[in-house]
Length: 142
Image (cartoon, rainbow, N blue to C red):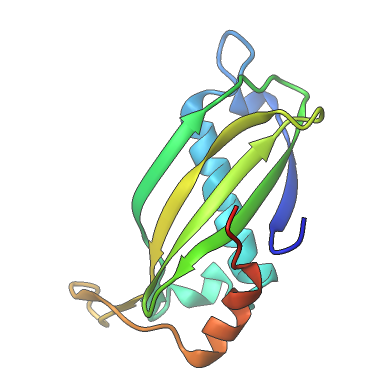
C-alpha cells in the first residue's frame, strides 16, 4: 500500500467502555494521534513546534464506524491525502483489525493556519513549497 502513512495501535483498557469495545471518542483521539505522528515523522513538522506560530486545525470530519474494536486487538491505521489545496488538504483514513476488516474510516479536512502572537487572530495560510513537496507522496485516490 504505497502513498499511505501507517501506524499500529494496541487497544488498551483506557480505550474501551464497559462492554470492552472502543468508546467512539477514543477512535477520534487515535485519529488525532495518527495525524500528529504523520506531521512529525513524515512531514518533519512536529506539533511541539508547529503550534508556536501556526496550526493545522480540523475543520471538517466525516467518520463511519464499521466494526467494533476490542480490548487487546491491534489496529493498523492508514492515512493518505485525497486532495491538496493551497492551504488545506482532505485526508482519508482507515483503521483495520488484524484480519484486515475495517473498523473505522472517513475523511478529515485540515487547514494550515497562521496564529497571531496574542492568539486572537487565526487565518488560513498557504503551505510552503517545501511542505507541499513533503505532502505530495501521500496523494492517493483511495
